[in-house]
Image 1: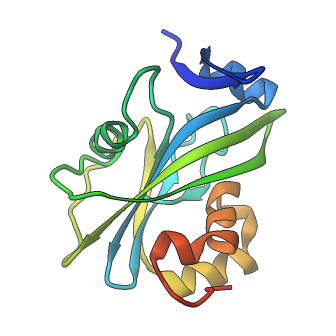
Image 2: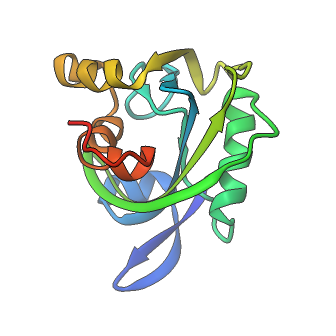
Length: 177
């Protein structure tokens, strides 16, 4: 069954199949979640079965809302579907637009609603193996350095978030890079 996502064509927001949106590089809606415990960020390594960027490390959760789905509801749904995480309080942080080549002739051109959850202790994860092959809690400052020194193991969007949008995502007064 194909997934229809909110996509702009000629100024109109329409439902387009997800793969088609990526093949054509169409601007579409997306959601990204960052779960933080102090200065540690929960990241995930995408499963090898993913149709783009398999095996690369990404932020806690990233996805596309279904047609007609509220972004906050989408974030909650995908945290549970991908990582088995429930009952977090998500805070809307900002909306970010980016465009990135993700390989195989596919382009992510996303208007992303960003959500952050700040937790006092590391939450347990139960990754869905069809979505996630590994998870890690990493120091945010170390991650920023690693994305610069080993960019090939991180998704393009994680690198963009950390390089260009870290201050607004992580609510820090200073620029991280």
